[in-house]
Image (tube, rainbow over all chains, first blue to last red; front, side):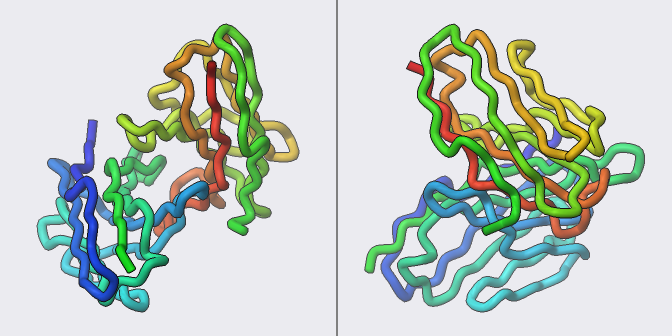
Length: 114
Length: 115
């Protein structure tokens, strides 16, 4: 089946540093989603990307939909302690032309040292 | 608050037992999805219901079953529990049968510990 390979698995950074993580797939996706999971909570949608080459920002977060439609990256600028959490990429699997479920990468665990 | 309510938040039970996890979707959402999250496997899709009917099945064990009721809440039943079933179980919901471009909304999860 379609798998999303997310890297790095974990990152330890100092407050104020920029962070970059990415997600690749052997299959094409028509949408890329980035979620963040805080400890003890469910994943929350950060950014959604709908078109190849699209670059979208949400505050200090920027994500891009790769031109091949097989990859995406997420950047966080000037990290702060509350950025700590697990970041997941996700893409919808299609059936009959419709998106019917999300498949997730294994996540990037981000730790920010104040 | 995401609008998706899961109960209980924590559950500790013994091997061989049966438990029921409950999910109330966000108001207006007709689709409910169940996911299992473990350290080594990440978020694994289990099953989807739409307006009371099962619509998609993932890596769900035969010991597990689910249903969606007329009021749209859903229950995930886990039986003959094993130590390896210990995980976080998430429910998510979306408006339609097909995932919208903004994905879906997750609840806070139920942490199941089997001892």
